[in-house]
Each structure stands twice: as structure tokens, then as C-alpha cells.
Length: 278
Ligand code: C2E
Ligand code: MG
Ligand code: MG
Ligand code: MG
Figure (cartoon, rainbow, N blue to C red):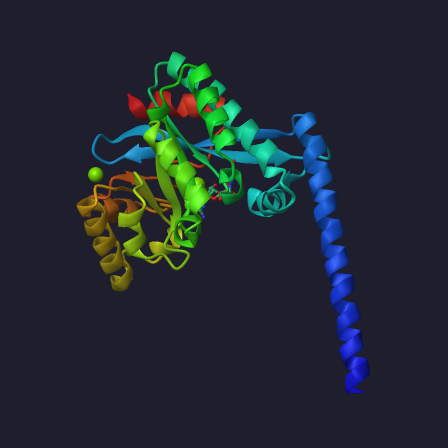
């Protein structure tokens, strides 16, 4: 009986695996065709600088509306694109579109920096990194106006090639942020080894604040360490007035979240800036 059960499990895994691979292939092909059909677009979420009260940055976030009009979340399609390699094409689209939009925003009179997410897999190739820099420069954008957001796992994995590319990008003026800080096994120790400009603390870090005293204490500790290392802190997922006030009181540097604004299309971002900045 054990033997049959074992074999059955074996078949079950194969079927599961095959089904999963097929699902992935389907999504991959739909994404590849969708890119050609211009189904992808960017939205921008404003980031407020506590010291001036102004929006000084925004994060570019990828959106996909397929040919049937279904909106698919990046949390669903980015991991597939990372596995199949389509992340390179998607990432290229994101950078180019963000550069084009940056020019529009600046021409409208708003000197705003833009943050762009980069997957670990996109940081494999120095030639690609050089292409990003020339793309940024071709649009007449100072490299300092661009921040690349990477996840903490990359820093902790100690992958020499990727780290070398990150160092190179930073030496060329691009800013670096650690995204979702606090969700992995982040060690504050890594912050001194790999110089970054920002850490973005994940919303799970303050979802119970200010009521949860442990969260408040951790936030306070993290802000102190960051300050000592000359790293600015961006709080992600700020949803309530009470969180906003706590962060302000704790002298956090930047805030991003639904309390300020959800991610906006370019037109809506310009409307928002018009109302917020003046
Ligand atoms: P992320 O980079 O951490 O982006 C923040 C996510 O939190 C966004 O989800 C944003 O819409 C959401 N968010 C913002 N404020 C709030 C809030 O107050 N409350 C809550 N509950 N959520 C908030 P989104 O747009 O669905 O993106 C999910 C993830 O997909 C991103 O997380 C990022 O890791 C990835 N992603 C998005 N665009 C790109 C891209 O162009 N390239 C790559 N490589 N990854 C991307
Ligand atoms: Mg991000
Ligand atoms: Mg994040
Ligand atoms: Mg600072």
C-alpha cells in the first residue's frame, strides 16, 4: 500500500508541476503579446518629504490590463516574469516610460524624482546597467533624479556580480533604496556594508502603530540607526492620520501610502501635484 501511495504522490507532483508550468507559460505568452499591444502602463504614487511637506518623489508601479480588460496585479505577474526572463523586457519598458513621464512632469513645473523597482534578475548584466544609464542620460535626466528600489534579499545574498553592478550604478549618481525593509531576515548589519541612500520600511512594520508599543519602539530604533548611517527612511503603506503623525513626531524622512494618495496615472499625478504643492 505504501508503495502505491508513494507512486500516486509522485504522479500527483508531476501533474501539479506540469499544470503550474503550463499556467506560467500561458501568462508569459500573454505578457509578451500584451507588451506589443501596449497593455502595460505605469502609475505613480507620491512620496512626501516630511521636512518640507512637499511631494519630492514618486514611485513608478507597473500595471497590466489584458486584452479582455482584466487588471492583473504585479504581485501576480512580476514573479512569473522573473522566472521566465520577460522581466528584462518589462523592466526596459518601465524605465523608458518613466523617463518620458519624468520629462513631462518637469516641463509642468514639478522637480520630482522617480523611484523604479528592479528585480534581482535584472541586475545580472553590467551591459544592461550601462544601457539604463544611457537611457536616463538620453532623456536629459540627471542620474541623481532616479532611484532604483531593490529588495533586501539581494543585499543579504552576497551575490558579487549584482553588488558590483549596484556599486557601479551608485557611483554614476543613481540612488538606491532597499524596498520592503523588515519583511525578510533583514539585518541592520548589512546597511553598513552596502551603502544605500534609502530604506523603505514595509507597511507590516507599522500596521499596528501607534497602538502597538513594540512596533513604535522598533520604528524608533530603526530611525536612529538610519540617521547614524546617513540613510533616509521612507515609510511605506501609511494609511492613517495617526500613523502619519507618529512618523512625523519620530522624525521619519519620507512617507508614502494611501493616506497621502494611491498610485495615480500621469494625468492624475499632475492634478494631485497642482493641489498638494500650492
Ligand atoms: P512595492 O515596490 O513594495 O510597491 C508598493 C506596493 O504597495 C504597491 O503595490 C502599492 O500600490 C502598494 N501600496 C501603496 N500604498 C499602500 C497603502 O497605504 N496600503 C497598502 N495596503 N498598499 C499600499 P503594487 O502596485 O500592487 O505592486 C506590488 C509589487 O509589485 C511592488 O511592491 C513591487 O515589488 C512589484 N512591482 C510593481 N511594479 C514593478 C516594476 O515595474 N518592476 C518590478 N521589478 N517590480 C514591480
Ligand atoms: Mg517599491
Ligand atoms: Mg515595498
Ligand atoms: Mg537623513
